[in-house]
Image (cartoon, rainbow, N blue to C red; front, side, top):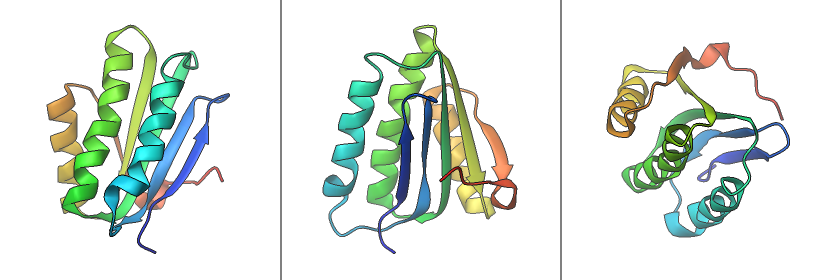
Amino acid sequence: MKTPWVNLDPQKGLIELGGRSIPENTESVYRPLIEWIEEYIQNPSAHTEVVVNFEYFNSSSAKYLIRFLEYFSTLKKTGYDVTIKWYYDDDELLEYGQDFQDVLEMQFEFHHSKEYKKSI
């Protein structure tokens, strides 16, 4: 599969995405997700949990992923309770998560992918 799976549950404040992200047109995959997030942050849940569990993503997906996570960094900086859980299979994915954490100046929780239990 070339596009990530996504679970958006605004009532629970749960946003999950993962799998593989190597779409031919990254904009068409991520634009609807970004639009949903822009709506969500207008009236967010008291606690928002963002779960990222990719096996692989390409560089164009990484650009959208950091943009996606910036919304939650901003939400946290405005006083909302936000948790980012970053799951990884290998050192490269862990390093991406650590780099994103540094860029966003927001603490992530890091977990190995074998600990992940998909809610959908």
